Every structure is written in structure tokens, then in C-alpha cells.
Length: 196
Image 1 (cartoon, helix red, strand yellow):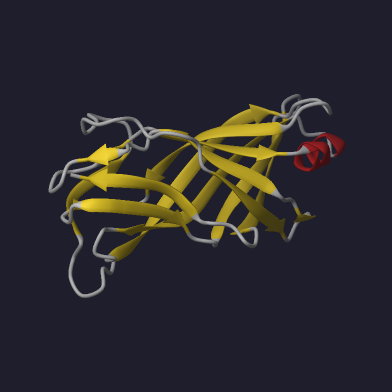
Image 2: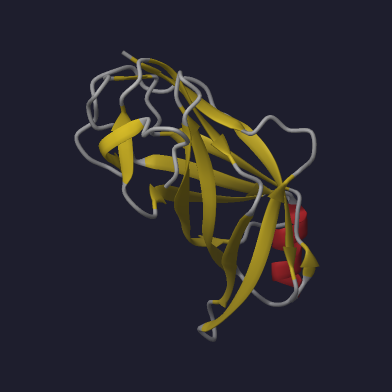
């Protein structure tokens, strides 16, 4: 993980459930729109992602930061659910690998890999959106804040994953690889934390 001229973040930060750093829970829900494409089925998007909970507003200077659990939702209109139903599938799950960029008050930044796992979810009927709810974790250890002030977390455009379609009756499971990118003209900011 590169941090420009000097290391901005040190120590251990855990992007998982655990003993939380005292502070207020993150306020508001940040929603982004993604365009998904699979070589197997073509365009799947747009899908919306949003962080539901798990990001604090205030963290302590020089101490490990605990995010968690970070709950993420992926929301799709009827296109994805409709394709699954038309092919005889009645449930889906997904695993996604993406990256975030963390930037501190001195504009030192690092790029961190994030894994998001969405468990098996029943495909709704034609009148409802498909909503997958999952948990995001850092794919490798990060480091804690060393510079006081605002610290931002932003999404990067490139993501990839596997969408698995299920036929409950037969037990069949069909994995489909996909790539995703942020739709144009979006602010990639996910959260701003205050380091004190």
C-alpha cells in the first residue's frame, strides 16, 4: 500500500465486527450507481450500491480504527431479477472485489482492497426490486490514522465479481463472472471521518 512521501496511516485497522472505537455512528447513506457487464449475459446494470451501517464519524488520532460490520446493499431494478426468473433461477448470491482510496488531512492516501459478500437471496416477483444485503471487509490489513483532521474514503471505478444463480428445486448453481464500473459523473466519496 503506497502512501506518497511518507506513511499517513499506521497500526492496525480492522474492517470487520469487533470492539468499536468510541465515537458517533456514521450518518446518512451514500448511494452510488454501477454499470455491470458479464461476458455471459451482457449488460446487467445499472445497479445501485449503498453503505447501510458500520462507518464511524469520529475516530481517535494514533489509534486503530474499527469499521464494522460494514453493511452494504446492492439494489437492482427488474432487469437482473427478470433475467434470472426467465432462465428458471429463483435465488442469487454475489461476491465482489473492489478498492477504496483513503486520504488524510495532509492529502496522503492509500488504495485498499475490499471484499463484499452477498449471501444467497430469493429473487423477488416482478413487482419488486432485487436487493442483496452483504458485508464488506478489508481484503488485507490497513493502517490507523496518524494525521488529525478529516479523512475521506472514496470508491474506485473498477470492480469485479461472481454472481451465482440458483435453481432451488434441482440444486443447480451457475456462477457468472462480471465487471463493474461507476456510472459517469458521480462523486465517488463514500464517507468522511474526523480524526481527533
